[in-house]
Length: 351
Image (cartoon, rainbow, N blue to C red; front, side, top):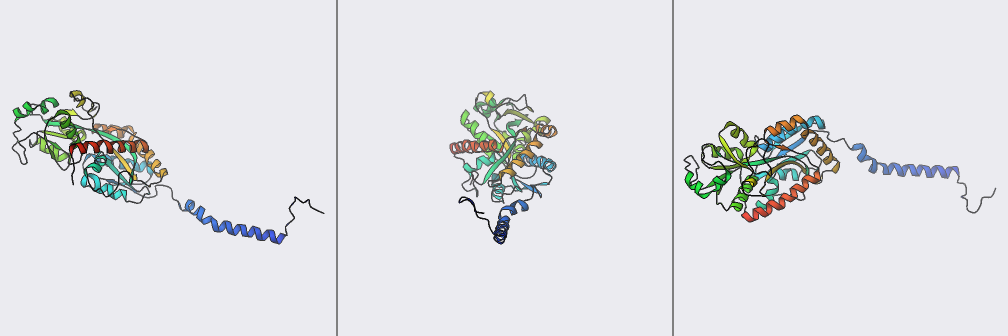
């Protein structure tokens, strides 16, 4: 039989076997480079996760991280271990995580100080813009301006009035007492220092900034009468306000705090537009795979939305929230620019 010119001649059986065998050999040789990652990839997470906190144990950021970590195990199926790496307003812990393996097993819990540090530290040891990325924003907490209940000041305006300052005389006699108008903050480069700087610039007041190593020591300085005014987180001041040993004059948030509904905002007291709300959130090394970031975001959001979690944190002064990674990253980048401009206006450097 003859085949048409356009047809393909029949191959010999031996040649067909050789071709097929060759194709199998080529496929087997190529298979490991394609299939190995799938075969070797373990579901995430497959071991405990470390959550680095950039402040010491007992503070607001640490407390928030521990409450979150305790509940995340139920969502992720692995323990989440809190590791405190304090120092340099959070830079030590942030640098550690920035250079960690981007596999989702080393995460960072930060607050707004993270967005302030690029403007006030000349050398960070990492780049906030390129080495770390937002996973989720979990809470806001306002700062509150406090004085002792024995103070004659009943409002922020009275506290900043020069004549009122002279009348009080700031007659502090304890160790470290200052004889000039002064306010205590939770430390150099903290949101509380910037809140005070914003206040001084807007009102023309000239109060000395007295930084302490955390909100706790700042509160103790106010209670002891060493400094007449304190700017601290609402979560740290709340027990003293409720106990009647401190008087709250104003909150720095855009709206009144649900826990302190009788305390007006700074904006309500003649400074429209004034607002500085301290955020808290979780970051990961920038090269962390998007699928892992999404998994973490979903698990953390589920924890934060639990009614008992929200109730616990609200009782401590936190305004619980959730966000996408992109939304949180936008908040970080906005505040790096905003706080950077303010720090330059204040000529603020801490190294």
